[in-house]
Amino acid sequence: MEPSRGPGVSWCCDSHSPRPTATMERGTPAKPDCPSAPDLDAPAVRAWGEDDDRCLRLWISLARSYSTFARAVACKVTGYDLTVPQFGVLEALHHLGPLTLGDLADKLLVTGGNVTYVMDRLEEQGLVVRERMGTDRRVVHAHLTAEGRKRIESAFPEHTRFVCGLADHLDPEEQNELRALLKKLGKGIADDCQHRNSE
Image (cartoon, rainbow, N blue to C red; front, side):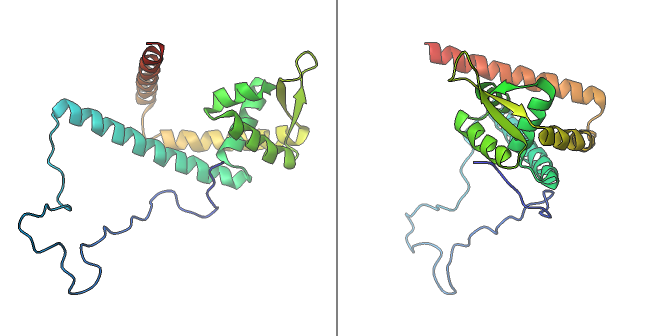
């Protein structure tokens, strides 16, 4: 399914529910009156070392940064009456030309079923069309319509400026360094997965 976020919803700060209290109502004991009962609410004792802690903190920072970045972009894209996956399909077809649904799935990092769902919604809006190849009827290509090209051509410059504004929290050298590091990390993880699957 496509992620969506309604217009006017702030992406800057999410509300966090308060941590549940140990009592449900006044006078209820927080835990059994038993000296041997474990304190289930006590934080876990850290049994990992500095190297483990560094890796865990990296993952948390990466996940939080991506989530914040993605929420900001999703909020902006709703202003074009599109979802992020819909915008991604239009942008890919605009810059790369007609693509098979499989190629779209690979480029958008989604499943074939998700691409089909996104294409259904875009086709309902008259922004794309699907066409089967004459030589192989199993292969379906996606094409922009005139209205689809008009929509993405109108939105993409503003979208680019918005994304650049988010990235401006890093200077150009930092942006290039971070991009190179993320590519290195992603390729290393992918290679590890491929190696494990081949064993």
